Image (cartoon, rainbow over all chains, first blue to last red):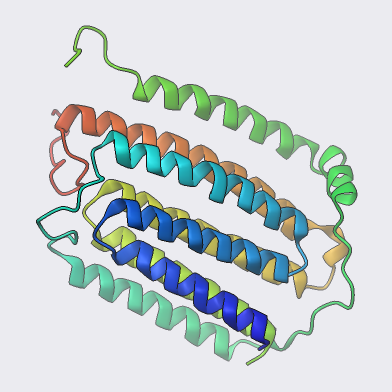
Amino acid sequence: MTLPFAIIAILTIAAAVAAMSLRNLVHCALALTLAFAGLAAAFLNLDAQFVGFAQILVYVGAVAILIVFAILLTRGGETPEKSVFSASWAWGLAVAVVVFATLAWAITKSAVVERRPAEQVEASVRQIGDALMTRFVLPLEVIGLLLTAALMGAVIIAMREEGKSK
Amino acid sequence: MTPLAGYLLLSAMLFAIGLAGALTRRNAIIVLIGIELMLNAANLNFLAFWRFGEHPEALAGIMFVIFSIGVAAAEAAVGLALIIAIYRHYKTANVDEVNSLKG
């Protein structure tokens, strides 16, 4: 385990824990942005430059702004007086701990983790573009259709109902 | 600890944190944030297996992550629109107070 990976891992996990446990929703959104940035650094550490920068553009840029807008539109900016955790929080926490224990046990017992990385991988934007336009052109078209449908669906769902203006 | 095990354990940890948040928090926006964290943990797994896999030149892992980011963006947009619609109807964004289908 190298030093950059350790720094990235500690930063990402601390930010994720903060995003899930802070009381003020705006603080949660900011901590989440930090966690996404840490994940982008992990992607860059794995020699996936294009995906790392796409992660910064999509998550640190767009999704974080979207979440902040949703928090402000639902008046979540104030810190709530009541508990922020649901009544059955102990069960949820227990399920998460069991899931992590199972995954960690499977990972440490697996023979896959002994693999060494390939010497030098080349994943330039040019190669990714070539692959997107040849082998993966059908998934690209489908994802375009999906994003168009989601765009229209989101606008229609969030539109004010007719004659019920409050 | 081997490098691949480190990435896989980081991903499992993020998945568990996201799952804990999605299961224990009352606010619907935080539940959605937890789901986003879980999706990102899966992306980290894809990239780790791509980097440490047999044929990284095939770019399969990178393509998976690109399409997964696209689907997650669509999911976030629709999910937040649903939360705003629910807030307009019930005047709350807490998932345990939204407990009737008829409204």
